[in-house]
Image (cartoon, rainbow, N blue to C red; front, top):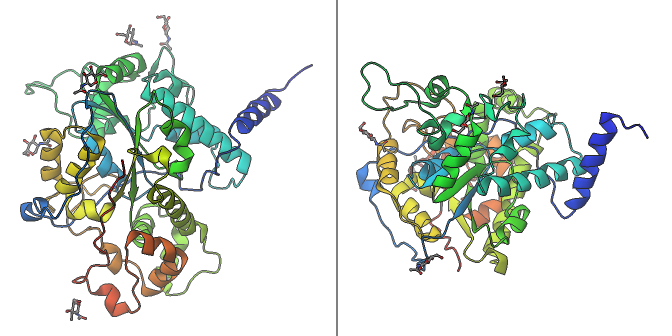
Length: 420
Ligand SMILES: *[C@@H]1O[C@H](CO)[C@@H](O)[C@H](O)[C@H]1NC(C)=O
Ligand SMILES: *[C@@H]1O[C@H](CO)[C@@H](O)[C@H](O)[C@H]1NC(C)=O
Ligand SMILES: *[C@@H]1O[C@H](CO)[C@@H](O)[C@H](O)[C@H]1NC(C)=O
Ligand SMILES: *[C@@H]1O[C@H](CO)[C@@H](O)[C@H](O)[C@H]1NC(C)=O
Ligand SMILES: *[C@@H]1O[C@H](CO)[C@@H](O)[C@H](O)[C@H]1NC(C)=O
């Protein structure tokens, strides 16, 4: 029998879909996935502020640990990624699942097809497992154009990974007045390091004690259950959440096309009738389901799930980072602490104001959505996300005056202690 390539693809997709029937749908999220945080003008005083910290049991830190940062776009995941990227014992990958989504579902934004999303999620899990085991060539089959001789210049945000921009993966020639290679930004890494040698990258991955991967393409922690229960993987999930009103305000600024109607609403004061409500509902539903799962403390998440509010990290970056490492049972390296101190001073003298950098000026603090969204938009979002706001301790506002009065915070003090 003759088989066209289309029917072959369908056959493959169908068989994968059957394999992963238990999976929830992959949610519609904008393709762009970069996150940034703006940290409050936190001086050293705030940085060293230490209210009662939860304590954690100690682990055998010699065991290879795999971290997944489970996040959504504009929730501060680039910042959390840096807390591992800056650690010399970590191999870090920034959003490798981008390639899976691009290869399997190029029109995901339009696709509401359940089977397609299951395929995507199944493939995503398989790839994550391979990547944690440093089988980086698994990624090659998703990269377009397909790498030849295990070499590619198309790896998404390669420059965001320190391991991929430093020797032995990158042996960029030194400039005339350089003592040793210090790459100033992601673009410079890509310019000077040349194509990525995937075999060398895999060696670098194996040479590191631990690995961390950040993604905004997994909707809920339950989608990761198979990986979490895999004893060979030792996977720990850090779920990063943020006030959905803050996510919305940040996305409106960043994803200008996708969120065009929201900007129209803000500008005209009238809600467009064809506004895509799914954009914010999806965030709240995924957060709600995932966080509810985590807080219900099922046995399979014991010692493997930590909930982190972006707002807490923005206010107490050092303290929260210490808690994070304590949960993981790993030592916090001074280079991570140095990086935090360098990047959370709220310096306003940044040369560039790129959307996707980790570092933002102090004006862009965690609660600045309160001056960016109209009261109507806030009320609308609150109504759609009410159960989530309560669960995470974000206060509802009832009056524009309350919204704009930044001297009272809308973030309740809450401590989410991981369970062991
Ligand atoms: C930690 O685990 C390693 C390997 O599993 C073992 O050799 C070592 O003795 C353990 N250390 C402690 C303090 O338990
Ligand atoms: C791949 O490697 C082979 C053997 O080293 C070489 O002949 C070929 O030109 C390489 N292909 C590309 C696209 O670099
Ligand atoms: C990648 O690195 C390996 C190991 O050093 C080397 O054998 C291989 O030739 C390199 N590939 C390319 C395309 O440079
Ligand atoms: C922190 O900033 C200082 C001064 O700019 C710099 O020398 C140092 O390398 C930075 N450290 C980190 C970890 O970014
Ligand atoms: C802002 O909130 C603070 C603290 O709740 C309150 O003391 C103050 O009167 C409020 N200011 C205005 C203008 O409403």
